[in-house]
Image (cartoon, rainbow, N blue to C red; front, side, top):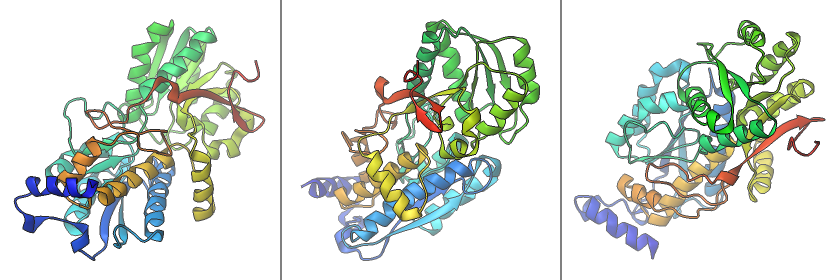
Length: 380
C-alpha cells in the first residue's frame, strides 16, 4: 500500500507518468553515493563512516537487493584539508555516476560546500555527523542528518561538572569552525546555567596540531578546575600525555569522540582522568557490533559508524518502501519517517530541519577504569 501511495505522489511531482522511476520497470543496479574523509584530517572517523554505510549496502545486496535490483555504492574521498575536491566529488556522483541518494560527508565543512549543489540537484543526502548548526542560515529540504544533537551531550557534560563542583573551565579546540566551533559555542551558552565560568578559550588554529604544551602551560597558570577539549583524529593520547608531563591533574572534559577504541588500546593508563558525555548504546547495538566484526574482522568505532549505517539503511529502505528513486518522492518519505528502529537511536524521526530528534536521556557520562569504559559514578 505504501508503494502505491508514494508512486502516486511521484506522478504528481514529476511532469508525467513517462518519467516515473518505478523500480519494477527497471533492472539496472540502483546507484547510491558516499562522501567520506578516507585520507587526511578526520580519516579515522571517515573510514568508519564508510564501513558503516558499506555494511548496510552489503546486507541489502545479500538479501537480494531492492526489488531484485542490486545496489552499487560509489564513494568519493573528501576531508576538511582537501576542500577543493568537494565540489568536483559531489558533481561526479550526481552527473557521472547518477546516484539517487548520498550518505556523507565527514564533518560540517564539506557539507556546507555540497548542500547547495545537492539542493539544486534534488537528490537526498543523509549526513552521519553534521551538527544542528549546519542549517542555521538556510534550510536545505533534501538534507537530513542521523547525527545526535550535541547540545544534549554538552548539557549532560555540564550536569556532571555541576555535580563535581567544577566551576572554572578552560577550553581548547583545534580550530574555529565546524563541530569544534559548535560544541564550544554550546558549552559557552549553557555553562552559566550550571554554575560554570569559562576562564580561557584557546583556538589552536590547526586541526592537525599535536603539540598542546604551549596552551596547556598557559591554562595551568590560570588554575582552572577542569579543561574542556575536543581533539581531532583521536589525539586524546597525545593530549593527555603532555598534560601529565606538565603536572596537570585536573579533570579533562570531552565529547563522545573520547570514548574510542584507538585511544583505549593506545593509552588506557593515562585516560582515567578524562570524562566525556556519549550516546548510550541502543538495544540493537550489540547485534550490530557482532555483524560488523564478522564483516570487517575489526571492532566498530562508536558512534559515527552507527549513524552512517543508519543513514544508508534509511535511504535504502526509503527506496524500497516507495518503489521509487525519484528525489522528491524520497524527500517526502524521509520527512515522514517516524519511530524508525535504528542502531544509533532506539527510534529515529527527523525534525523540520531534517535532524534527528534527540531526547535528554540519550547521553550518559563515561570515563576509563582498568581499561574499560564505565560510568564515573560507579566507583565513587
